[in-house]
Length: 436
Ligand SMILES: Cc1cc2nc3c(=O)[nH]c(=O)nc-3n(C[C@H](O)[C@H](O)[C@H](O)COP(=O)(O)OP(=O)(O)OC[C@H]3O[C@@H](n4cnc5c(N)ncnc54)[C@H](O)[C@@H]3O)c2cc1C
Image 1 (tube, rainbow, N blue to C red):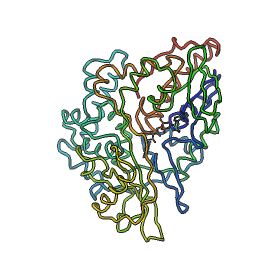
Image 2: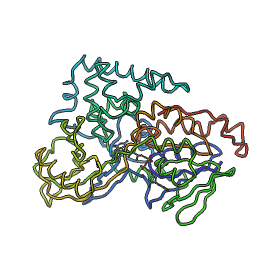
Image 3: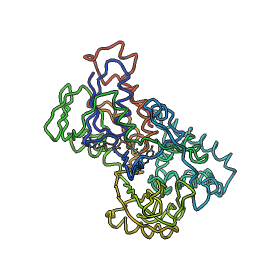
Image 4: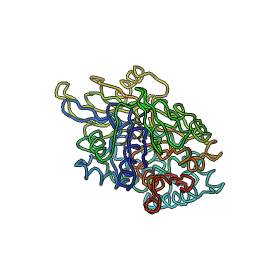
């Protein structure tokens, strides 16, 4: 069976890697850019690798760690991070309620209870209602105030919205036991050779066509005909949408489900700026501040700054600072960044470059109540099309990988492949996937 994956970012590449292991499958990834990796954007500065996009690897993805080892990528542990000028764990412990050692297992139990209910084909009404409410309300009802403080750093601080806005289902998908351990025990690591090298090495296991911007998809016959803007035509038995669903829906005659899902999400957007600064922190690898991350903080405030290296010429250090975009132009964000860094004790000597990203597709709460989660499961395999990426799991590589493991099993179950040939392929027989 020929599968075409549209999009060579982390979701398309990791799914291709998983499918390429399965017998009887031929996978081709079509990527618009001349490079792979999507929002993984490694650059080189005076011999030092810097990550504008995807940066760290935590304890929440063993598969990712294993693949990196297999591809010869070394993971470097990062030093402590500062939150309000002290270790993150001190900030988290300052939250009210029972001890952290009690709040963590209680949170994980409640999270498990809700996620199991949400994985059922007929989701109970109470579970859908809890899924749609803001994570802050869900946590406060359970007196999990310390976990709420953890989410200031690991939800809002990573561009996944304020705790009073982000839906419970999206927060719970991301903040699992592995992420709690990563953050509380300072277990983040960074790939020494850079994310770009990792994705390039991983892609040696399947076909990739770079500079292939897909502009039209026809799915009316027994096959999918994919056309690029250069006029190349590719024919596949099945396709995978590994690009934002709203972009996908514009290049084909969308199904009712595709249109509904595209209308139910709003991208938040994030900007990262590489700066050289003097008189700033050098004792931690990341610094962030609660005043910028509490509900109500204005867009353009600094989500975090990460120490990237030293610059002899200016006698200072390089930092990667991130901001929510909030409708601002790059020049405005850069202007604001001067004030942000000054407010936190440093001075920007030079702004080197800003990159903006389509980041974190937030679900509309009413859409969740109207069955968005069920719709996203049921549409898998419809019109010979499968869906992965940030909107279907969570906008982080570990969540995408977990989701893709299940998706690969659904697209090509091993038993199924032994019984049937490619010609007998019948999508109606395939089970629905569960949420990520
Ligand atoms: C600033 C920042 C920091 C982050 N840090 C981390 C981190 O530390 N750890 C972590 O796990 N995650 C991190 N993430 C999240 C992670 O980068 C994303 O979850 C991941 O990149 C999403 O992968 P994706 O493949 O779904 O989408 P994308 O990365 O957006 O990739 C989509 C790909 O599809 C291609 N494409 C689009 N349209 C077409 C078309 N018409 N035809 C062909 N190709 C097309 C694009 O060029 C792109 O390559 C970060 C994200 C950002 C923005």
